[in-house]
Length: 345
Ligand SMILES: *Cc1c(COP(=O)(O)O)cnc(C)c1O
Image (cartoon, rainbow, N blue to C red; front, side, top):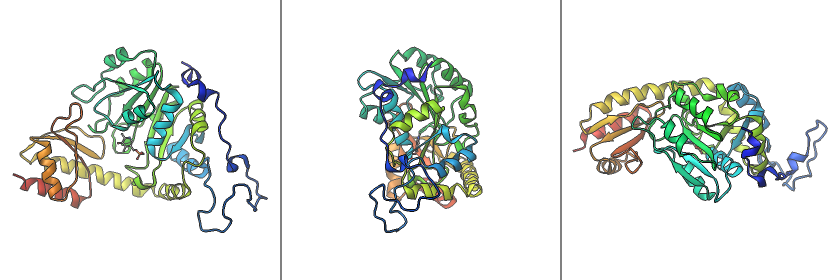
Protein backbone atom coordinates (compact mmCIF):
# COMPACT_ATOMS: atom_id res chain seq x y z
CA UNK A 1 0.00 0.00 0.00
CA UNK A 2 1.43 3.40 -1.04
CA UNK A 3 0.25 6.45 0.88
CA UNK A 4 0.63 8.63 -2.21
CA UNK A 5 -1.94 6.44 -4.03
CA UNK A 6 -4.50 7.20 -1.31
CA UNK A 7 -4.11 11.00 -1.45
CA UNK A 8 -6.58 13.09 -3.48
CA UNK A 9 -5.05 14.34 -6.74
CA UNK A 10 -5.69 18.03 -5.98
CA UNK A 11 -3.85 17.65 -2.67
CA UNK A 12 -0.98 15.74 -4.24
CA UNK A 13 -0.50 18.57 -6.75
CA UNK A 14 -1.07 21.39 -4.29
CA UNK A 15 1.56 23.98 -3.54
CA UNK A 16 1.26 25.02 0.11
CA UNK A 17 0.82 28.68 1.12
CA UNK A 18 4.11 30.09 2.21
CA UNK A 19 3.68 32.43 5.16
CA UNK A 20 6.07 35.23 6.06
CA UNK A 21 7.33 33.31 9.08
CA UNK A 22 7.77 30.18 7.02
CA UNK A 23 9.92 31.80 4.37
CA UNK A 24 12.11 33.47 6.92
CA UNK A 25 14.78 31.08 8.14
CA UNK A 26 15.87 32.03 11.60
CA UNK A 27 19.22 33.68 12.04
CA UNK A 28 20.64 35.04 15.25
CA UNK A 29 21.34 38.36 13.54
CA UNK A 30 17.73 39.20 12.84
CA UNK A 31 16.20 41.58 15.32
CA UNK A 32 14.08 43.76 13.03
CA UNK A 33 10.92 42.05 11.77
CA UNK A 34 9.27 44.00 8.98
CA UNK A 35 8.04 41.01 6.98
CA UNK A 36 4.54 40.19 8.25
CA UNK A 37 2.69 43.52 8.52
CA UNK A 38 2.32 43.12 12.28
CA UNK A 39 1.89 45.98 14.73
CA UNK A 40 5.44 46.48 16.06
CA UNK A 41 4.43 47.53 19.59
CA UNK A 42 4.79 44.60 21.95
CA UNK A 43 1.91 43.31 24.09
CA UNK A 44 2.81 39.62 24.25
CA UNK A 45 0.84 38.56 21.21
CA UNK A 46 1.56 41.17 18.53
CA UNK A 47 3.67 38.67 16.54
CA UNK A 48 2.32 35.75 14.53
CA UNK A 49 2.85 32.38 16.25
CA UNK A 50 5.39 29.84 15.03
CA UNK A 51 3.58 28.10 12.14
CA UNK A 52 5.63 24.94 12.74
CA UNK A 53 5.22 24.93 16.55
CA UNK A 54 8.83 23.84 16.91
CA UNK A 55 9.19 24.30 20.68
CA UNK A 56 5.91 22.61 21.48
CA UNK A 57 6.59 19.73 19.10
CA UNK A 58 10.04 19.23 20.63
CA UNK A 59 8.47 18.97 24.10
CA UNK A 60 5.80 16.53 22.90
CA UNK A 61 8.30 14.50 20.90
CA UNK A 62 10.50 13.92 23.92
CA UNK A 63 7.49 13.23 26.15
CA UNK A 64 6.11 10.63 23.71
CA UNK A 65 9.46 9.37 22.47
CA UNK A 66 8.81 10.04 18.77
CA UNK A 67 10.40 12.37 16.24
CA UNK A 68 8.89 15.85 15.77
CA UNK A 69 8.53 14.83 12.10
CA UNK A 70 5.86 12.31 13.17
CA UNK A 71 3.69 15.03 14.76
CA UNK A 72 1.03 17.36 13.38
CA UNK A 73 -0.86 19.71 15.70
CA UNK A 74 -4.41 20.95 15.21
CA UNK A 75 -6.95 23.29 16.76
CA UNK A 76 -8.39 20.35 18.74
CA UNK A 77 -8.54 16.78 17.41
CA UNK A 78 -11.51 17.93 15.41
CA UNK A 79 -9.29 20.01 13.11
CA UNK A 80 -6.83 17.15 12.77
CA UNK A 81 -9.59 14.73 11.77
CA UNK A 82 -10.99 17.24 9.27
CA UNK A 83 -7.54 17.66 7.67
CA UNK A 84 -7.18 13.89 7.31
CA UNK A 85 -10.60 13.59 5.67
CA UNK A 86 -9.82 16.39 3.25
CA UNK A 87 -6.44 14.92 2.34
CA UNK A 88 -7.70 11.43 1.51
CA UNK A 89 -11.42 11.47 0.66
CA UNK A 90 -12.76 12.69 -2.68
CA UNK A 91 -16.14 14.36 -2.03
CA UNK A 92 -19.03 12.46 -3.57
CA UNK A 93 -16.86 9.43 -4.31
CA UNK A 94 -15.00 8.08 -1.28
CA UNK A 95 -16.29 6.82 2.05
CA UNK A 96 -15.15 6.34 5.63
CA UNK A 97 -16.07 3.48 7.96
CA UNK A 98 -17.25 4.18 11.49
CA UNK A 99 -18.26 1.76 14.23
CA UNK A 100 -21.37 2.96 16.11
CA UNK A 101 -21.91 3.77 18.86
CA UNK A 102 -18.97 6.14 18.56
CA UNK A 103 -17.82 9.76 18.64
CA UNK A 104 -20.29 11.88 16.69
CA UNK A 105 -17.74 14.16 15.02
CA UNK A 106 -16.55 11.51 12.52
CA UNK A 107 -19.91 11.49 10.79
CA UNK A 108 -20.35 15.27 11.01
CA UNK A 109 -16.94 15.86 9.44
CA UNK A 110 -17.74 13.34 6.70
CA UNK A 111 -21.05 15.08 6.02
CA UNK A 112 -19.37 18.49 5.84
CA UNK A 113 -16.92 17.09 3.31
CA UNK A 114 -19.59 15.22 1.29
CA UNK A 115 -17.97 11.90 2.13
CA UNK A 116 -20.16 8.81 2.59
CA UNK A 117 -20.20 6.93 5.87
CA UNK A 118 -20.37 3.13 6.03
CA UNK A 119 -21.46 2.08 9.51
CA UNK A 120 -20.60 -1.30 10.98
CA UNK A 121 -22.00 -1.56 14.50
CA UNK A 122 -19.84 -2.70 17.36
CA UNK A 123 -20.96 -6.01 18.84
CA UNK A 124 -22.88 -6.11 22.13
CA UNK A 125 -19.59 -6.03 24.07
CA UNK A 126 -18.76 -2.81 22.19
CA UNK A 127 -15.94 -4.56 20.30
CA UNK A 128 -15.32 -4.23 16.53
CA UNK A 129 -16.99 -6.73 14.22
CA UNK A 130 -13.78 -7.39 12.29
CA UNK A 131 -15.26 -9.63 9.58
CA UNK A 132 -18.24 -7.29 9.18
CA UNK A 133 -15.88 -4.33 8.66
CA UNK A 134 -13.74 -6.17 6.13
CA UNK A 135 -16.74 -7.29 4.12
CA UNK A 136 -18.49 -3.88 4.27
CA UNK A 137 -15.53 -1.96 2.83
CA UNK A 138 -15.16 -1.29 -0.88
CA UNK A 139 -12.48 0.19 -3.11
CA UNK A 140 -13.57 3.72 -2.14
CA UNK A 141 -13.22 3.11 1.60
CA UNK A 142 -10.31 5.41 2.46
CA UNK A 143 -10.45 5.72 6.24
CA UNK A 144 -11.41 3.38 9.07
CA UNK A 145 -12.11 5.15 12.37
CA UNK A 146 -11.30 3.19 15.54
CA UNK A 147 -12.04 5.03 18.76
CA UNK A 148 -10.22 3.23 21.56
CA UNK A 149 -11.05 3.73 24.39
CA UNK A 150 -14.39 4.27 22.71
CA UNK A 151 -16.71 7.18 23.38
CA UNK A 152 -19.52 6.68 24.55
CA UNK A 153 -18.97 3.09 25.73
CA UNK A 154 -15.66 3.72 27.52
CA UNK A 155 -13.92 0.40 26.74
CA UNK A 156 -10.73 -0.26 24.79
CA UNK A 157 -10.80 -2.47 21.71
CA UNK A 158 -9.08 -5.87 21.79
CA UNK A 159 -5.48 -5.72 20.63
CA UNK A 160 -5.82 -8.66 18.25
CA UNK A 161 -8.88 -7.19 16.54
CA UNK A 162 -7.15 -3.86 16.02
CA UNK A 163 -4.03 -5.61 14.77
CA UNK A 164 -6.02 -7.61 12.23
CA UNK A 165 -7.74 -4.45 10.98
CA UNK A 166 -4.41 -2.63 10.69
CA UNK A 167 -3.08 -5.47 8.56
CA UNK A 168 -6.15 -6.15 6.43
CA UNK A 169 -7.66 -2.70 5.84
CA UNK A 170 -6.05 -1.20 2.76
CA UNK A 171 -6.34 2.46 3.63
CA UNK A 172 -5.85 4.87 6.50
CA UNK A 173 -6.69 3.56 9.97
CA UNK A 174 -7.22 6.32 12.53
CA UNK A 175 -7.03 5.24 16.16
CA UNK A 176 -8.57 8.03 18.21
CA UNK A 177 -6.84 7.82 21.58
CA UNK A 178 -8.50 10.80 23.27
CA UNK A 179 -8.80 8.73 26.47
CA UNK A 180 -5.62 6.65 26.26
CA UNK A 181 -4.06 8.19 29.38
CA UNK A 182 -6.81 6.65 31.52
CA UNK A 183 -6.46 3.23 29.90
CA UNK A 184 -4.69 0.13 31.11
CA UNK A 185 -3.86 -0.73 27.52
CA UNK A 186 -0.73 0.77 25.92
CA UNK A 187 -0.97 3.43 23.24
CA UNK A 188 -0.64 2.22 19.65
CA UNK A 189 2.01 4.92 19.32
CA UNK A 190 4.53 2.31 20.44
CA UNK A 191 3.83 0.45 17.19
CA UNK A 192 3.48 3.39 14.80
CA UNK A 193 6.37 2.26 12.60
CA UNK A 194 4.86 -1.16 11.92
CA UNK A 195 1.80 0.14 10.06
CA UNK A 196 2.27 2.72 7.25
CA UNK A 197 -1.44 3.64 7.11
CA UNK A 198 -1.80 4.16 10.85
CA UNK A 199 -2.69 7.59 12.23
CA UNK A 200 -3.04 8.06 15.99
CA UNK A 201 -4.86 11.08 17.34
CA UNK A 202 -4.61 12.31 20.91
CA UNK A 203 -5.64 15.53 22.60
CA UNK A 204 -4.80 17.78 25.54
CA UNK A 205 -8.55 18.16 26.18
CA UNK A 206 -9.12 15.22 28.53
CA UNK A 207 -6.38 13.79 30.77
CA UNK A 208 -4.13 16.82 30.34
CA UNK A 209 -6.87 19.14 31.54
CA UNK A 210 -6.68 21.68 28.73
CA UNK A 211 -9.95 21.50 26.81
CA UNK A 212 -10.01 25.30 26.70
CA UNK A 213 -6.83 25.79 24.69
CA UNK A 214 -7.87 23.45 21.83
CA UNK A 215 -4.84 21.31 21.09
CA UNK A 216 -5.20 18.10 19.15
CA UNK A 217 -2.25 15.92 18.20
CA UNK A 218 -1.76 13.57 15.31
CA UNK A 219 1.04 10.99 15.12
CA UNK A 220 1.78 9.29 11.82
CA UNK A 221 4.55 8.43 9.35
CA UNK A 222 6.53 11.35 7.92
CA UNK A 223 4.83 10.71 4.58
CA UNK A 224 1.40 11.30 6.05
CA UNK A 225 2.48 14.21 8.25
CA UNK A 226 4.03 16.09 5.34
CA UNK A 227 0.78 15.77 3.35
CA UNK A 228 -1.26 17.13 6.26
CA UNK A 229 1.26 19.92 6.96
CA UNK A 230 0.78 21.08 3.39
CA UNK A 231 -2.96 21.65 3.81
CA UNK A 232 -3.21 22.93 7.37
CA UNK A 233 -3.93 26.65 7.88
CA UNK A 234 -0.49 28.27 8.41
CA UNK A 235 -1.12 29.66 11.90
CA UNK A 236 -3.60 27.09 13.18
CA UNK A 237 -2.13 26.89 16.69
CA UNK A 238 -2.25 30.29 18.33
CA UNK A 239 0.56 31.71 20.47
CA UNK A 240 -1.34 31.44 23.78
CA UNK A 241 -2.12 27.78 23.16
CA UNK A 242 1.50 26.98 22.33
CA UNK A 243 2.71 28.72 25.49
CA UNK A 244 0.10 27.17 27.80
CA UNK A 245 0.69 23.69 26.42
CA UNK A 246 4.46 23.95 26.93
CA UNK A 247 3.89 25.11 30.52
CA UNK A 248 1.49 22.29 31.28
CA UNK A 249 3.75 19.65 29.74
CA UNK A 250 6.42 20.66 32.24
CA UNK A 251 4.08 19.43 35.02
CA UNK A 252 3.86 15.78 34.07
CA UNK A 253 3.85 14.56 37.67
CA UNK A 254 0.86 16.71 38.52
CA UNK A 255 -0.97 15.39 35.48
CA UNK A 256 -0.15 11.79 36.45
CA UNK A 257 -1.48 12.41 39.96
CA UNK A 258 -4.74 13.81 38.59
CA UNK A 259 -5.14 10.83 36.25
CA UNK A 260 -4.55 8.37 39.11
CA UNK A 261 -7.09 10.18 41.26
CA UNK A 262 -9.69 10.15 38.48
CA UNK A 263 -9.15 6.43 37.84
CA UNK A 264 -9.45 5.51 41.52
CA UNK A 265 -12.49 7.76 41.98
CA UNK A 266 -14.02 5.97 39.01
CA UNK A 267 -13.70 2.64 40.83
CA UNK A 268 -15.42 4.17 43.85
CA UNK A 269 -18.20 5.60 41.68
CA UNK A 270 -18.79 2.17 40.13
CA UNK A 271 -19.25 0.70 43.62
CA UNK A 272 -21.60 3.51 44.61
CA UNK A 273 -23.67 3.28 41.43
CA UNK A 274 -24.16 -0.44 42.01
CA UNK A 275 -26.07 0.42 45.20
CA UNK A 276 -28.67 2.46 43.25
CA UNK A 277 -31.70 0.25 42.58
CA UNK A 278 -32.56 1.66 39.13
CA UNK A 279 -28.99 1.27 37.83
CA UNK A 280 -29.19 -1.91 35.78
CA UNK A 281 -25.75 -2.25 34.27
CA UNK A 282 -22.41 -0.42 34.26
CA UNK A 283 -20.23 -1.02 31.21
CA UNK A 284 -16.47 -1.61 31.57
CA UNK A 285 -14.53 1.65 31.28
CA UNK A 286 -10.92 2.31 30.33
CA UNK A 287 -11.62 6.07 30.26
CA UNK A 288 -12.62 8.97 32.54
CA UNK A 289 -16.35 8.34 32.19
CA UNK A 290 -18.90 5.60 32.79
CA UNK A 291 -21.74 4.43 30.58
CA UNK A 292 -24.52 2.82 32.57
CA UNK A 293 -28.02 1.57 31.88
CA UNK A 294 -30.94 2.71 34.01
CA UNK A 295 -34.66 1.95 34.06
CA UNK A 296 -35.63 5.14 32.21
CA UNK A 297 -32.80 7.35 30.97
CA UNK A 298 -34.89 10.40 30.00
CA UNK A 299 -36.63 10.43 33.37
CA UNK A 300 -33.36 10.09 35.32
CA UNK A 301 -31.62 12.64 33.10
CA UNK A 302 -34.33 15.23 33.73
CA UNK A 303 -34.37 14.54 37.46
CA UNK A 304 -30.62 15.10 37.60
CA UNK A 305 -30.92 18.35 35.64
CA UNK A 306 -33.46 19.60 38.19
CA UNK A 307 -30.88 18.92 40.90
CA UNK A 308 -28.26 20.87 38.99
CA UNK A 309 -26.30 17.87 37.73
CA UNK A 310 -25.66 17.56 34.01
CA UNK A 311 -24.84 14.16 32.54
CA UNK A 312 -25.21 12.96 28.96
CA UNK A 313 -28.22 10.98 27.85
CA UNK A 314 -26.90 8.54 25.23
CA UNK A 315 -30.16 6.62 24.83
CA UNK A 316 -30.56 7.39 21.15
CA UNK A 317 -27.19 5.92 20.21
CA UNK A 318 -26.90 2.44 18.76
CA UNK A 319 -26.80 -0.22 21.55
CA UNK A 320 -27.15 2.46 24.23
CA UNK A 321 -30.86 2.21 25.00
CA UNK A 322 -31.57 3.83 28.41
CA UNK A 323 -27.92 4.65 28.91
CA UNK A 324 -26.45 7.67 30.63
CA UNK A 325 -22.83 8.73 30.32
CA UNK A 326 -21.23 10.42 33.27
CA UNK A 327 -17.80 12.03 33.47
CA UNK A 328 -15.74 11.33 36.59
CA UNK A 329 -15.69 14.62 38.49
CA UNK A 330 -14.04 15.60 41.74
CA UNK A 331 -14.59 13.44 44.81
CA UNK A 332 -17.23 15.91 46.02
CA UNK A 333 -19.00 16.08 42.65
CA UNK A 334 -19.18 12.29 42.41
CA UNK A 335 -20.56 12.10 45.96
CA UNK A 336 -23.18 14.69 45.08
CA UNK A 337 -24.19 12.63 42.06
CA UNK A 338 -24.57 9.47 44.15
CA UNK A 339 -26.42 11.20 46.97
CA UNK A 340 -28.81 12.77 44.48
CA UNK A 341 -29.41 9.48 42.65
CA UNK A 342 -30.25 7.87 46.00
CA UNK A 343 -33.04 10.38 46.63
CA UNK A 344 -34.74 9.87 43.25
CA UNK A 345 -38.09 8.09 43.22
C1 LIG B 1 -13.26 14.50 23.58
C2 LIG B 1 -12.90 13.70 22.39
C3 LIG B 1 -11.96 14.19 21.47
C4 LIG B 1 -11.29 15.50 21.73
O1 LIG B 1 -11.51 16.43 20.80
P1 LIG B 1 -10.75 17.82 20.90
O2 LIG B 1 -11.22 18.48 19.64
O3 LIG B 1 -9.27 17.54 20.87
O4 LIG B 1 -11.16 18.49 22.15
C5 LIG B 1 -11.60 13.40 20.40
N1 LIG B 1 -12.14 12.17 20.23
C6 LIG B 1 -13.01 11.68 21.11
C7 LIG B 1 -13.53 10.30 20.92
C8 LIG B 1 -13.43 12.43 22.20
O5 LIG B 1 -14.34 11.91 23.05
